[in-house]
Length: 199
Image (cartoon, rainbow, N blue to C red; front, side, top):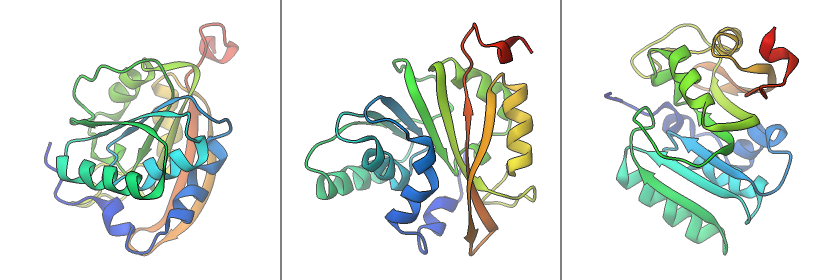
C-alpha cells in the first residue's frame, strides 16, 4: 500500500491538540482501558486519547512510518510524565497481534483501505463486547490521490452495519480547510447476546 500523502498531517497545519481532543471526547467516557490507534501518523489523536483516558490507559500506536512513530514518542516524552504506549512499526492492514481492546481509533486512515467492509469485520474481532471503533474522517464521497476511498458519515453508517457493528453515532463536525468538513463518529462491537446482533 503506497500512501502518497497523509491527509491528517496536512490538516494538522490548522488543528490544535485541543481540537483533536474535542473531536473524540464524547467517545472516551471512562479512564484507563486498552486502546489501539490504527495508522497513527504523528500521533495527534494518540496524544488526545492519552489526555482523555489518563495515565492508566494502555495504548498501541500502529504506523508503518518508523520516523513518525519516533516523532510520536518524542511528543509523549515532552507532554506526559507517565504513559503506557507501545509504538508498533507496522502497516495496520497487516496481521497484528493485539490483546482484546476496549477501543480502536482510526483518524484519517480508513480512507486508505479499499475493501473496507472485510477490514471492519476483521478488526471487530480485536474488540471486546461493546468495544468502540472511533472514526475521524473527511465528510465526503469524492476521492482524490490523498483520500482514495472516502468515507462520508452516511457511508460509514452503511459499512459499519455491513461489518456487523451496532449503534453507529455521529459526534462532531468541524470545518476543514481542504475537504469541506471533518467528522467524528463511533460504532460498537456487539455482545453475542445483544438484540441488535441478531437483528
